[in-house]
Length: 506
Image (cartoon, rainbow, N blue to C red; front, side, top):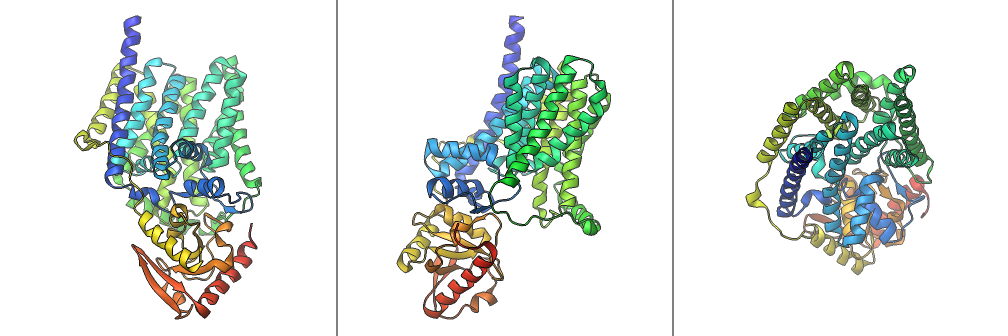
């Protein structure tokens, strides 16, 4: 028995070593590239909120305009923790994103042990996350989202962890375990609506079909835990809707446009990485097979939930008309990872098949990493810091700390400014302000309006603001410093649209 325990520990260590290799490769690539992808306007949403509210003192309530996926938990908690502990924004951003796959690996480890009920399956948890990271490092979507610090990674973490905690409660009970399940799923629902339309809705469906088949204490506890998961996730989502936080009008269901939406989805699906498409379908097939044929009720119920979660997520994508660009593929990260969990459950049923899966994970990781390029260099400053310093100098000189700009420059400039510059977000055609992921506090005081970043703006409306300006280039940013009547015109434009859209200062 002692030797068996040592063997199992050695195999699990192999899984963690695979994950360590994938993380080392990711870290080395990120540092070598100067972390350019980590200052993208979408990706810095969480740092922008944290810096704005906790470090600059701007209000959260009645100020920040959020989406149904503000990524507060676990993404935001990880970033805030690293920001407090490490101090430097760049290091906090990189470290928090590296901790996401570590958290997912811990959750997946518990998932395999609790669902398959075999301690030998523990090694498959970190190995699966290493495999997913390797897929991402090789450029395969949606696994590439695991190597950037955003885009619904938290859904995969919360859904995987919640499933593990659910079955822990089903096996041994305990109020602490049930409370942990409730808190985790509530925080997840508060952070990302995908947990509501996917795992929570799927759990509810499975519960309805298994209600009459509960003849044991374990069965009843499983039903109770599943109900807590579904109710807590829904409660988290409803709490987010009830908070005094402004919201951008969301896309409603567009049933009349469903044929066009389905056609666009099919075109996007065709353009999706064919290799990744195949893996997603294989994973879904594995879940379906387990749901129908497995001799374990626990595996059967879990597989049915994961398969339905994939289906409900796809339906939600269609009905929400959220296909304005190819970015909808990011919603498939959790379904894609749950498919790998299904394959792992198949592999965990026999010793030889588990060994085969571990060997496959190791082979893919070996292809994706190159230890010869690993370095120990410290994280560099974001490349935009020098450009933002130039903008800071202009704002100080002109007393114009409210800069007008388009979405893709708003959060990076505001986040990195050391002079209190904030960018008021406007539409590219200057027909109004843009309310997507921005803070009302950034539009005031209007008297400090005087700079315009023209990147991404349409030339015609910009020219209409007037000829009295000084053109300035700050690296990749093209600016206009307005004076006289032109500055008054820019201030009037911003005041008119801001008051009409969001009212006065928060």
